[in-house]
Length: 434
Image (cartoon, rainbow, N blue to C red):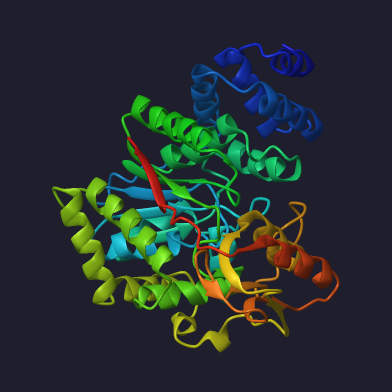
């Protein structure tokens, strides 16, 4: 079996066998297949796609590349939540503490920034001292104590995905539906959870631009879960404008704190509560989804979720006071206001442009080796549907380096669309799959 032959066949749209996919995954994980060949295979997959059989084989091969975690010694149903990536999407840092406060065991294996989208690990690591590199044993100990642990991709769990995840970001193959599905589900299955709640983003700020694509991805992941007896539900949610007001790592942690104190943006609060409710329902804390929604709301209003996040920050080496004192988080040295050239209604805010501008000033990565500046980003002052006057502030860019500031400022200004009539209101949660 030769790697180049498999690349050739996939390029031409042929279906590979489970053994052939295993050969590629195992060879790459062991370092026998070089990055340039795996990059070619990823690009071939991007264009040619994969059958359901191939996706299942790829997922299983990535799981077998490492260890599967056994969480059976910890009482309770284990539920994880995952987003396919958006701009300003910090729901994991809100929904997970709410669910954990309700009694759900939540092993959160999260990712880093991909392209124009942020990463949960990067946001958490903007908290000084916060550790995401927990060992499996450390994760288990913490879950038993707090019901919640945020961990990164470990060398033990699905290491093939860890390597391919970074490579996808630097080879423009992030948006491939089969690669997204196998990446997410291999981690979730290998980490030993019983159920998964998925937030599949669609729109200008998502990797899936069309709802039919988002539905296909959601169905593919739900199908993978069902084949291995995992309960999976997927929400398809709108990402045509950023979620909340904050885009950028430390800035988003600040907004998480406000939201868990019931003082956050309405769209972020609404979606986080629904995701938490589904985690609570799949975690069998309640018998119905409506009861789960009531529990999630209660955990927000009584401060339980806020206290839970503080507890987890302390457990993972950070200072929980950062949620009260934002000056303890990394702060930018400069700010640039973007003013509206005319009055009217905000008809659109191109989320991808906002994400790209934020990445440009240091909040994301161009290549996988890039360091992230946790202090920088964008704070919106308006949302779609809002009426504004000429000269009013649309958003502020927070920066520590002026090298690409002008380019980023122009990109942000172009992201706002202003019309003379109010746009039709768009639903935040578009569909439920599973």
